[in-house]
Length: 352
Length: 171
Image 1 (spheres, rainbow over the protein chains, first blue to last red):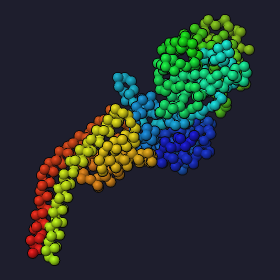
Image 2: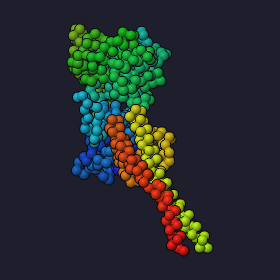
Image 3: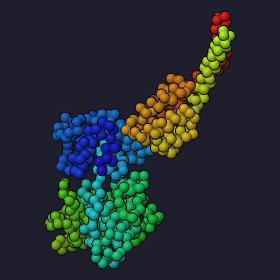
Image 4: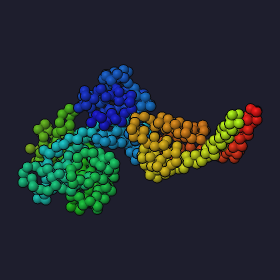
């Protein structure tokens, strides 16, 4: 992991950071390079600066301050000396590097017709370390399966940012594609054809079209494609049995989900929110939930330094599964409380 | 013996004159080569979005020496030592190539300046810089042609004449 990140740094930063890796490799979450401001590491336990001798410090004034030349070199390395061939990425504000790590960029925006055409004078870099948690979705799988159809239910995965939505969706795609079913009657089911629409290159972290994360052997990835359009294109061209998409939210996304559901394709999608309450406040998703489009809702939480916690709810707001540390009374942040007006009656009967 | 020396002096002076004349003849040709290289680079960058190492290697394949080896050196350098800024590699390779060519300082300035912006911006901006460099080179090409017209034949005869003069003075 660390080598992939360090190799995108100029010699000055490599000399400072390299000795630190063995110590912090496991808990490193972000490396922040900002021109003429302290070099910062974000670890699972908090934030640390790094001084010119490669020692960690809590004092910003002791820290090494990357120069403008350092930042220019980072950008040259990230874009393979060819910023022009990364125009789409520079417009979106991030570049995905081998290993699935994501480098966020900030600088001066160049506008064209009111929207951002690209970013220039880039002087802030955020190296976000991606971790693939193989098996994250495995304990939840039995409660997500539709045994009649030998497939998965339409599932919406809900969590706040950085709480494991994407990790979960990725692992679920892998399990379905590889056919790693729970060891019960379903063990002999074949794996499913999975189509992934990876608008923000987070699910698969494709580099030149090839996924860097394991999404299973029967998975087709549409990288960098708008969700609604990508879902329709995959339905037409790749005949998927399950569609996976990240971060639903726009009206056209809802239309595409509806289209997929009516085409007999199972949909696994994620949405920002602490529970269905939040999701319901977003018009596009409210309609989908109101129609009962999603048969399962997974809510996830991750406290810093602890493992992923989550629960699975059905469309009647009944809790089907929860991890050991999931708070028993967490209905308010979970789905049930006000899932949809149609299901309000089920509220009382909800949690065990 | 004296006659033998005279012949050598005459030959040397003639050769020197011809070499000078050749330099004047080669300069516009090599500037034209540079211009066509820039044009192909622009196509690779603007229409192909080809990453620079591949674009340079591709353009080098169709170019003449010493420009071809200049581009190849930079392309290989980008792959082997990616942490070196392009502008340094570009300048270093250009200095080496210029020593082996008939090209002069104004072309060098225009070409080396291109290295400070190449690959660092979007396609529209890259096209602008490439065209600016091409315009500067085109202006140099004009002067080079003028000089060729004026000095090429002059040097050719001047060499022989100076040689003859020395020989006459020796006797």
